[in-house]
Length: 410
Image (cartoon, rainbow, N blue to C red):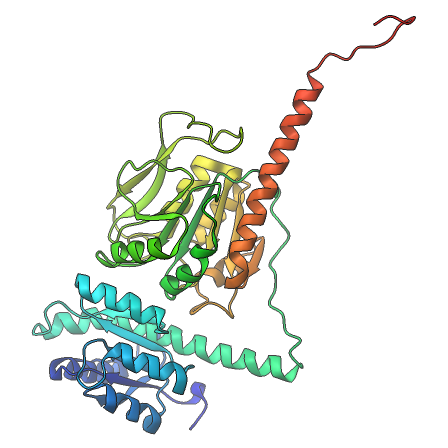
């Protein structure tokens, strides 16, 4: 087979619906005829009617990306995924999910089983034009990004083997000017590959994690609620879908609901002392449904801008796996306010779009593998708190009157 740069991307679709198979065929034919499209060339190399046919077609056709239905006869999508993790773990898989509560839960299970991303099926497959538009906007860019990411990871693996394994990702740029300011809030932004990354990161945060965490994950309604419930079961901290006016305080991780932007707004003054004498500030969740930003609602930038505005140098922004550039402008605002910006590295990201943009802009104080992020968060937060307590101690000492001895008298 020719190298990826010299041929169209080969796409295999598995779906038991004849309508969806027809939509897929027409989608890739139209894409091939659209010479003004800036996406790479793609071709539908095959279709499968069920899970058994799908596994056979993967071996026979060697696709670059698999688009996989969840509900199929003989073997369903989850069973196919589990087989592929053994037989073909490097194949990027995009799930095709129904926009229902059951579909959302099954999709999250698929992402945990190794699927790279998902798209939601058009609500009315009988409306051919709407189905085509929905899938072209959702599916084609994801295929392009995942294929590109798989190619780059393969190239990096070759580079590592050729250098005897002496390969290390850049750790980013020097720390920001307020490197040791006490951190009072952590804000996280993710997209493609995010649910799986969160399932690995958040359970590593201890129950006494001393600052609140707010997350924007690009997902539609139903999916964010199901994701919050799933994460809550595996984490020491509480994980909840955010709601208007919720109090932001340590012990809870707030996940932005689908189809609503989330920001941090002012509360009613200082909160109760809850951290060994270091008073936190009062803030609350603010939700709104303004127009999508960066084609996203919720958008990471809204959250990050509000963190910079409310917390300044006491904000820590973490940009993780995802396609696009949402979060870049907000992360820059956090950086310019003296806060800390961290990014996930390319090797551990499903797609290194969002964290890659932040790293390339030179505003990330560190670019880290996923397995190291939790430790980095704890270390940075603890260091800032120790520095603040030490500063407070020295300030108190300086205010004590100094008594000097004169002729044996105080």
